[in-house]
Length: 159
Image (cartoon, rainbow, N blue to C red; front, side, top):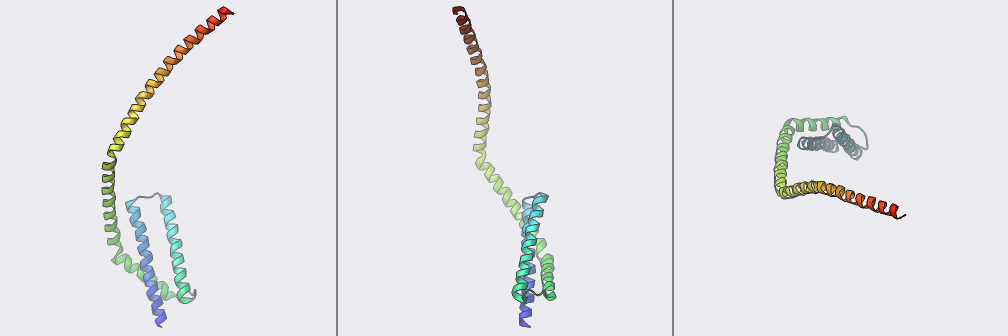
């Protein structure tokens, strides 16, 4: 009987833990928006992880036999966590992380502003110089063409 009570307690804790892990995924999705494909990929990984956890619990505690009281214990753990902890945990943790990411973004933008200005000025200068290079290339091309034409005429006259 004590073994079954421990098994029920482990199942309850596993239900809470699995729901906590999914809440971490939900928080990350709120802070860093994902595409539908990435969300599906994360969910697939989550469900594979859950299946492995349930399998290991069943294998270790009941030699792989499915015990319905363990399933009910996990469901109770999920429901209790979802009702008591999850709404506040997800809401306030995601708000705090969003604020931290926003502040970090502002700090990084401030720190890298001189580099951005330098790169912008360098790009403007390069664009301006590129126009000059093209213009000079055309001038050089004309001069060479005139000289080659003159040399060709001189060569024809001497032959």
